[in-house]
Image (cartoon, rainbow, N blue to C red; front, side, top):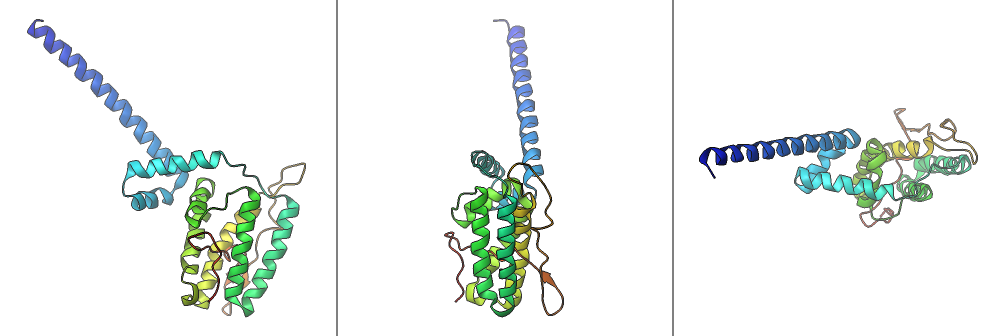
Length: 221
């Protein structure tokens, strides 16, 4: 092979490699942007948690594939109304027994998720599943859980904040309730109106729930 032909061949190979590199970079950037858009702050949290972007993106994609196989459905209006009545009892209980209210709210929220079709694994798995379609409220769910993990060391005000965080999840779980034969997005009967503390601050329904790391409700000491 002539030297000129060899140089020409090497140039062609280099161009092909460069083209493939550009295509790979564009596809990688597109995937990253799509995952950032879908998961929001959870993208960065996962990168920090697993220690790298590639592993984080693999983790997030696995969540999407896993949740896509679930049979998740909205609550029926009847289920929503039943859960709303139970949640009102939780709010009323908080006034006299914050720890017991957190425990009951925790059980209620877990029941709601189970009813909608989320598998009841440990907390981290439930949290990851929620981030796929409920990223913002999943963050509140984790924040409430972190407070509840303090167990007997949590103050009443901290438990109030935990309930406020979980209220966000409660409201979202009831927001898309449907009639048995037709879909409705009316959430008026199911959303929380909160509980006021001594300063008039409102906290609410779904923030009550928190789980231990093994998926069991946090029991007050």
